[in-house]
Image (cartoon, rainbow, N blue to C red; front, side, top):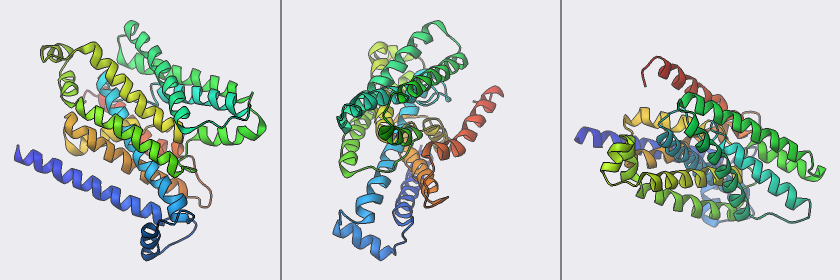
Length: 334
């Protein structure tokens, strides 16, 4: 027991240290180089018009928080479907959010109405719930998890096709911003966005942590969870709502980001050697945060001054993890 607690503590410290290093590296890296002293002075002065305080710090904080939210959303979906390959992007939830957000942006921007951050989250949440509703309906007919994942991929393709159809009716001036957003990026995040992200994600994370015991019971089977007094129907609704809110917040501000929701929870489980929710929820958040910070650093600096789509970078590093998961499941090792 003591060895296990020591391992958890050391792994948490490792993830915190990794996040701290990546945060500092992201703030310092870019087309304009700064010395550590200049970075520290800029942070202490709070110069809102400066590159560090006005541009880099909001982007870095958004990448950290949203990456963590996406990883926790993936962990909740993997728990719900009892499948390590389940995730917001694979199941088409991110694509559903992308479709409704695109539809809202085209409808409002064409009328000269500026869509606010809260409205973006609401639209993304509606799209997430729409996709999740279809998946839940299919889950009643499709019993094999592999076929359910394939169904989710198909829903994602349908939503992407509908999004492309909607974009054709957008004005030329709006297509560029809509196209850049749909590729996935943390650029352009403002302090107002960061404040809203913090409120939404922190609220959802707190509620998720309160569900740690029911999640732990559910992992051992529905019958065991019911014997422990868990209301399965209510529990499932809570799990779906929380995972949808977290993934919707990410899609609303950064666009659809692939593979983080699958790769980060699996890597964290491999590091901690446990699936206990009270450990995995904060660990997944830190792991997803570090994963997105690293990918955003690559996206900004690999071909500077050009930015690469964050979703492309996460796919490069996250897809091999998914392939490993599929191969190991086939071999009967998971």
